[in-house]
Amino acid sequence: MSTLIVEPEPPRFAFGQNWSHFLRTVTAERIAAAMRSLEVVFGPDGLRGRRFLDIGSGSGLFSLTAYQLGADVTSFDYDNDSVGCTNALRTREHADESRWRVEQGSVLDADYLETLGTFDAVYSWGVLHHTGSMWTAIDLASQRVADDGTFWIALYNDQGVWSRVWSGVKQLYVRLPSWLRPAYVVAIGVPWAVTRLTAKLTAHVLRILFHGLNGGNIPAPSPERRAGLMASQRVRGMHWWYDLVDWIGGFPFEVARPDDVVSFLRDRGFVLERITTCGGNLGCNEFVFRRLPKA
View 1 (spheres, rainbow, N blue to C red):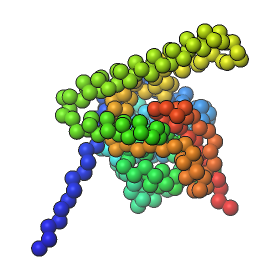
View 2 (cartoon, rainbow, N blue to C red; view 1 turned 90 degrees about the vertical axis):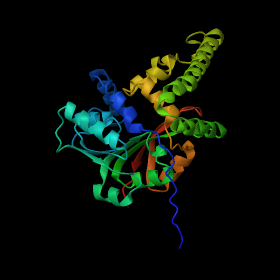
View 3 (cartoon, rainbow, N blue to C red; view 1 turned 45 degrees about the vertical axis):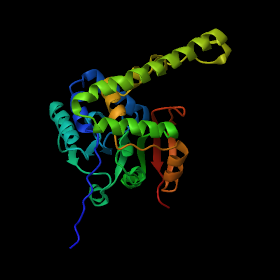
View 4 (cartoon, rainbow, N blue to C red; view 1 turned 180 degrees about the vertical axis):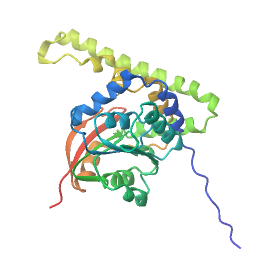
């Protein structure tokens, strides 16, 4: 008689637990910042009366802001704690449940996704690279976009060998006992943040020395660029510490080159409308696509 051997699932980062801590920091100011980030793409009235799908809703912050911008929202997440966070935020903000549906589900479950129908806007920021099957997740998520609809995703940039190093960092985090993890985040995250800040400040000082603040027809850096990581998170209403924990511990972890993402979705009937890259460095590249109507 043969014995069935079931391989244990590899450890995963507890995204929902991290979001539950972040949820305590969600203030009116953070909600307003998140809303402004959606308005950059959709405008103040671009979501009114439209169907919005939030894949991997996490804390529920962007589902909330889409709802407040007038969309009919469907949110789902693989992690039950994240589903709980989204439900809690919906309740806290007294949202109409008939216009904001919250469910547990997986973006890798094609049958589940089929039940949802299609949407005018599908949003999945920093989620699909954590599924363990990123390209399948992108493909299945893209199928939920209606003709002429918007597909807005953010994916970790492929840095080659450095991405493999970071994958090892994340795998070690999820294998550590929980009481050691905060110290691990500090040990890895603080030197990394200091190094990035030092590099930015050095580049800025050299720029001033060689060109003057506005010399050489080079525009002064924006407030977000001058302030670095923490300001960039405030732009989306996020919190630097919980984003850092997510970055150090977020496993599964996959990466993609911008050209590969654009090519992959072009083959599926999408045209790129907007891209914000991390300049070949560490972080997420952000893409906004539109599905071309079928001929």
